[in-house]
Amino acid sequence: MRWSRPHSPVFGNPAAKVTIVEFFDPSCETCRAFYPVVKRIVNASFGKVRLVVRHAPLHHGSDTAIKILEAARVQGKYWEALERALAAQPEWAAHDRPQPQMIWDLIGDIGLDLAKAKADASGPAIDQLLRQDTADMQALKVDRTPGFFVNGTPLREFGEAQLKALVEQELKKAGAP
Image (cartoon, rainbow, N blue to C red; front, side, top):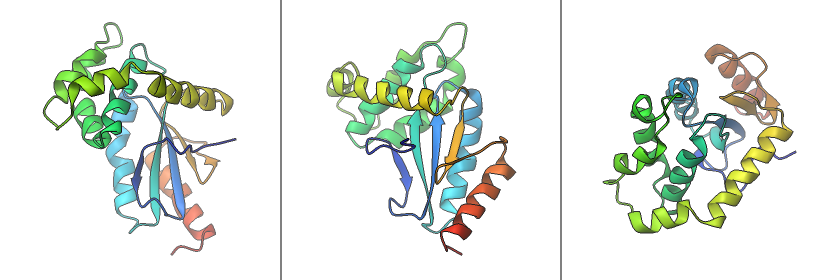
């Protein structure tokens, strides 16, 4: 089973010994709350830990949000677009009335060619990436977000302390102090 795919966004050192794979839904409040925690773990590792994002469209409208983020990634602006989308998540991701198209307005000034991004977002390449992430999510039985794997080991009990402990365990196994 593939926890990570070549198309997945990577934050941190691409050659890190420890990989946190997060199945992530941009509409998920817990994903939004946990994002800075995961970033801190990666940033504090001095290049020993990286984050690989896999998309998990579990909320209504998340597939559209993911396609917009992936279109930004085509132009090298994934992380900026993601941070803008997360900052405004309460406005566009209301579960009773999701409006993911609002993300376009949020990211309009980050240097994207918006016409190209909108074409990419509705194109077959990004649709295929989303289908692959969804298929892997289902195969791995990820049914809630965020869902974490560290070097392929699933995080069984959700929480910041539990994730840090699993990362530490994997760092020791990898011989990274």
